[in-house]
Image 1: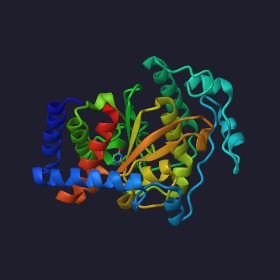
Image 2: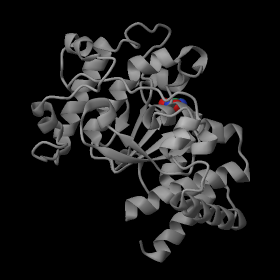
Image 3: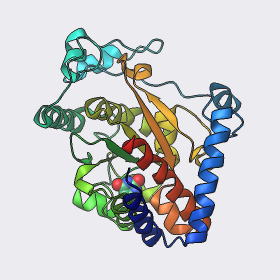
Length: 303
Ligand code: URA
């Protein structure tokens, strides 16, 4: 990327996070040191399998029904042992593996997302039973997004509007996106849960087990180049780890669709702090850390 454009992006991020130049220099240094230690395998946050094993038991991804499958197929697919292999037709339809046909047309992905939205609303084992929420929050953004942000669950404003990240945390996320010189419409924003938990509590594992697979399907349709997980629940789900976000943030991981769907798709994941956490802990350190994480994402997207 052209240097002056990078400098402009950095200034915008500095403004968004209130990070001064000294902080910025420190975070760039930390990023470089972190990247080096991850490459050399010495980082405590590197996503090596051994690190996961050192954490608590790694959750098993739940197998998915093929896209567009009737609810009965969902139950039929729920084998506790092996990931369910999707049919060749479905593989072909979502453009991964098989003949390698890609979903070049935004409309094609959009139609699949709409079908998934309807199917989720009618059959999600969590959301169809949950009470106390007003609207489902499916997710929104460009069906051709290269970058997807995954949060935790809708809050009050999201529940009222049916849109993700439109409350205070959403304003901070908007600043982060703008500082990356992107527009909100260019990215895609989704959550682990599509209905608001009572009093915004952290999602229960049973809720994630029920609703999470629909996020996985969303990601299979979107096939972004990079996913940014915002906070613990999204990171735990996509990286299948129990390691905490403070250890994981800043180090690239990989979301492997094959563990869920049998589809041959791997997407780099950058875990970072949830914007709500950032707002509650608005220090030079946390701002600098998120800033460094987003810079790594920008560099990857530019590469
Ligand atoms: N927090 C989230 O994790 N998601 C939202 O959509 C809003 C707040």
